[in-house]
Length: 158
Image (cartoon, rainbow, N blue to C red; front, side, top):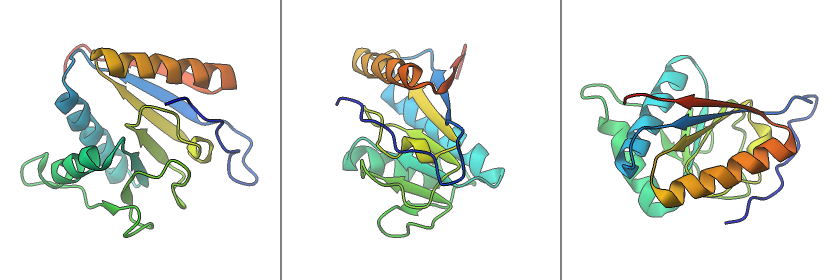
């Protein structure tokens, strides 16, 4: 999927999103979803609204289940974006809209969603699986060319 030009930031805000790439030391797609859950929980507990952009319905269903059970007795309350757009944590598929979410976008899609510019922070989670790494490189290049503030976090362990 070829990245698309991001929308402008919300009215009155001229700053670009800060994009963090989290590089995990594994090729496990399951570890990628687990890390998305951890990141989501941390942001939610800090009072941020989170939009998880999923690649497809299968991935979203898996993430939905993990958010209910990923931490034993704890869970992250969430909903599907098209069911409850105002949820503090929303799981979406649409490539053109994230509703009124502006805090954190966790992008699990292969491309850069058109609405990326409306978020203060963007998290890209990368594992060593060849397809994921290649699409992450393309997204990194796109963000850099567009002038986004980039930071990479190479995790040594999960």
